Length: 327
Ligand code: SF4
Image (cartoon, rainbow, N blue to C red; front, side, top):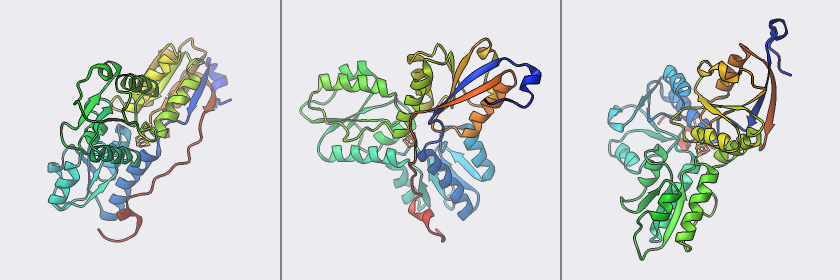
């Protein structure tokens, strides 16, 4: 039992907390943050980062304090400063422009996103038209579509679009997906595509990444025991948004997203016996701790961690950061 030191004295009501495991940082996010930190250490501040390195304000602000400057486009980066591309991946035009300007750049694209980029290229080389299952406007989708010439990839956002979206006739088709989708929604969309195009080529191995899959499975494992699910994450984080949806669909009456402990409305937990807590892949564990600290203001917590998978995966830093030396 996890008791605040003076919980008994304060006679606070008991609240069971189911902690989803795994939760929080994935290997791709961990690598992206290390790339920025290591770049600052080696080359000195400032290091520019194109787009939020990962979708979490706490992480971004802590890197800013170390000397990172976040920009949206390359034209905001001076010629003599290093620049890092975010974990979500970038269209090919971005490194091309960086090379043209002779910028020193480091690519923090998650290797599992890069894998999807390579799949897209292989399908294109084989003359296939590609259907990309994903969310319009998400930087990963922009990056993946930007691997290939315009018009060679059709975005499919839901099962209805899978059934009706116009596709070019007379060419073979293939589908790929964003890495952070809802596993269940994607199954439905793929089923609709296969029904309409029985010959469509599928990824050799699932594009939805291990971290997304595991975090959704962990939420499902606790959803029907929890009366409220608190998801630590950011509203622009795709995998965090999916955790809110997955919790509610798996039987939790209410799921809320909070960015920081102070954002949690404690009255939501009043009168409840059990809540669940999880965190998206871009949310650090310290923010989960913040939520627990916040809950302890009004409750005596009894914490149980429910782990559905052990994660041991790590990704190497880019070659330029693996050896000591100047750029
Ligand atoms: S959520 Fe998955 S694809 Fe995205 S950075 Fe993490 S491991 Fe990579």
